[in-house]
Image (cartoon, rainbow, N blue to C red):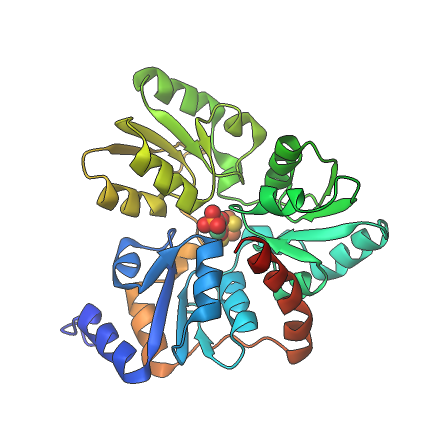
Length: 310
Ligand code: 13P
Ligand code: SF4
């Protein structure tokens, strides 16, 4: 790339020329969030992907998110700035193993968290996100037996909140599993008035300490509405960019992980860069393709989710 190019201007030009829309998740780099047409949590992003009239969707997020956009808008070209932007949670649930697992519970309905492959969605009855998982479980009769996958932490949280006995797949997200209860406790001693905001992909020991538990959009809205001045944020720190933009007078502290890393960046989300976003829009590559038979099967549980959360 020519170093004299203003990537913001170039991306804006290409977007207009090609009738493209940029959808970005809150875990993306600040630059990408700033150039996006829409920033949101997984539910908001899939709702946008379903209704856009753009010809090209550039999905600044990870592979399963771009796949979901393709399933909902199969006639559109869906691009992902880095084709290798995967997800440890989606990887923790290989579809052939999940199929066998599901066969052990033939009278159970399958709810899958959106953080999974298109093939896994095709094996599901209803998809959910962290913002509607409780609502979706509660929309089912109490006697309905349910398998919930792939995230065991979100599943356990939903089981606790709804009082339902869910059969859980043993999957987890590498980013949300490594927050340190001890380090957060020490941080709270130094910031006694700070509220702890946590994503439900965190382990129960972290969720137990939280003042608020919710999706990235939920966390952002809670911080904006709250009278508190300080917040400890137990999710991927990319969200702090919007939290600071919306609340310049408030202080946001990333929750510390239990390893020696300085932060909890998601290595998959952070594969995307502004440069890659520019090149992907320019070259219309890498493009996300989902086989037709998978689209036909996977769209039903996603649409069921969108109907319940409408
Ligand atoms: P939400 O933005 O839906 O809360 O999802 C968080 C996440 O881990 C996405 O990968
Ligand atoms: Fe996957 Fe976790 Fe990264 Fe989200 S934060 S994309 S769940 S690895």
